[in-house]
Image 1 (cartoon, rainbow, N blue to C red):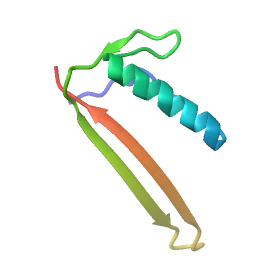
Image 2: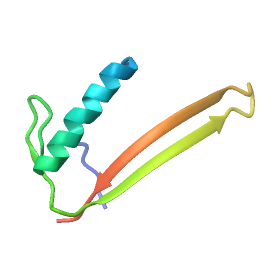
Image 3: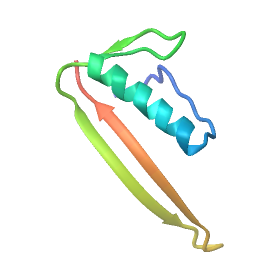
Image 4: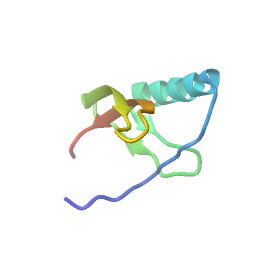
Amino acid sequence: MPEEQVFSTEQELDRAGMAAELRWLADAVETGRVAPEGEEPIELPERCRYEFEMERLTSSETGEVRHELEVEIRWTT
């Protein structure tokens, strides 16, 4: 299935800033309409698949450990 990226953002924030972004997203999901500033809104159905993932990745070369939290919401139309 071809993929079209509609919107993407990546930024470094402090915890309070990240929490504010997640609250904004939670409020938007609750209303069923996600519309990042300046972007076309996306309508969410009443039921979607939700995935929350925590990862710990260790570099085999340096031993450096990186942690990731990922949230994914998906549905079909």
